[in-house]
Image 1 (cartoon, rainbow, N blue to C red):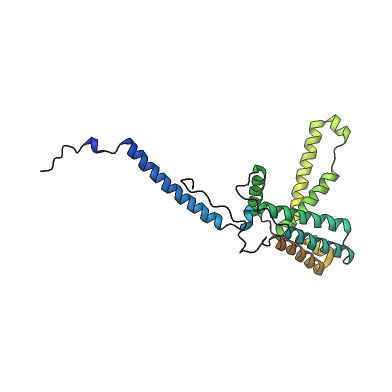
Image 2: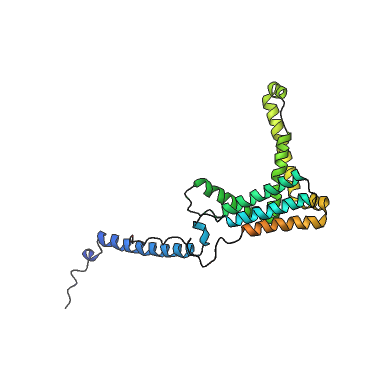
Length: 235
């Protein structure tokens, strides 16, 4: 007959055994997480961990410069106005494109913050062709508003707080109007140059964005693939 005297609290697992079982479970969980991270990083564009290639930027600059010169020389666009719009649009497009390439593990906190803000801006308002042209028009209008507004020294000396508040409120109202008109950029464009040239301008702007969105290298090039994550055991 089997003796059951040993069945009792002494048969319960010890603290060391419980800790070992927990460590094994934690190690298995970590291996699953590492595998998931490797799978996610493998699906990222190969350029995300590499410096951005200058090819799209050079091509976009060439297209924008040729179109700008052609518009001024052959279409009779005002040189100052066309240059302001053209260079602002080109610069914004390049900045937004570069921020999209900033990896999530970039060592610069400022670049990661800027990239996240731009991504959030794009998700909320859209920064494709229409949004980029609207932003260009808004920034130019804001620059003109700020350059034309001023506070006289007499006003500042006589009522410093009141004059600053009045200037700030006026600028806020001006910014709201600038934002409204910037969203309607196509109205003065078509009215000012006609539908043929307006369509050509929009096509050039679309071409710049399309060139900037080109892949940096063929899909078969794996030079930019991230390094393999270390195993849980450190190997």
